[in-house]
Length: 433
Image (tube, rainbow, N blue to C red):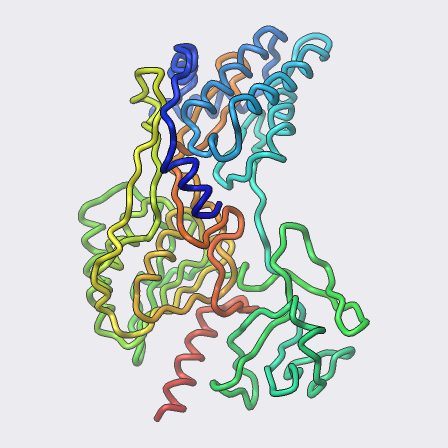
């Protein structure tokens, strides 16, 4: 979504009135926190419903979508939505006899998968989860290039592309991915690159200089986190391990994150490890950066619909929330943010909060890309017991695309990207002394 589209759909949104039936569907299908365990249990078993009941469920599903889903106005018009709904109902009517919840789930998913790209949106039935998402993955070759005056020289090669071989800009321009290279005789004043692609479809090989070269999924996607403390002081820098933000909102813990940020502000460099952090409560990274940098804003503009329990009339409108980007940026060191494809949701808001720091370097690979549609709620269709989950809030950030996420300054093809950054920092220190 670009800025023009966001402003057209959400900033300039014209209030819309839906029939009372849409609100009734929302209240009938909404699952509170207390009811979630039972709802999951009910959805996990095979259920067969009549065609009449299946059609009623589909109508409820699309009523909830129209009234509560923050991505509805981006992906649909009412006319388009009605066409999709009718297409599903036609399939139901053609099925002989009763319909299982898994088959109904498939009918809904099949019609929506080409329309919706939302990494949070999921359907659950009969122990099967289907996500309506399109995620990009980085695939790279076992080759490292160094930029030279007349092209790109191979500094790490293989049997087909030997060390020292020079490749032209034309040959490699579509595959270049900047990287931190710490090989023998590497220099900090040189620019190094991996060869690869960031793609929704699996990339098994690249075409290079008339040859095929095999690729693999970038190794930093395997990176998780050790059981180390959240803050680990080192010589001249500090490692910060934010394993997860999936915690209840805890004022005492929020204060701990703030105080840890204050302690880190005294260091020359901070390695913030968000690899494997699937998100949760955005208050934790906000408080950490408030302590570190004096500015915890994450840069996302919000367009929010009411929580489903608060919908009481037929008028649909968005509330806009803008971040305060005029805050100070007091930290003068460098923050290295380590991230990968498992860095998602509120952890991506942690990445974006780092952009307010004067000197920030992102390393690893692209984040999950599930930061656009959030504050997810659970719904359950009354007859088939199918569960569906989506967000009633939308978050816009310049340069952020669902499924792509935030891209690194340096792509790291290593299972231990934090270790690579540590060696990089040590190398810079030794060469500066």
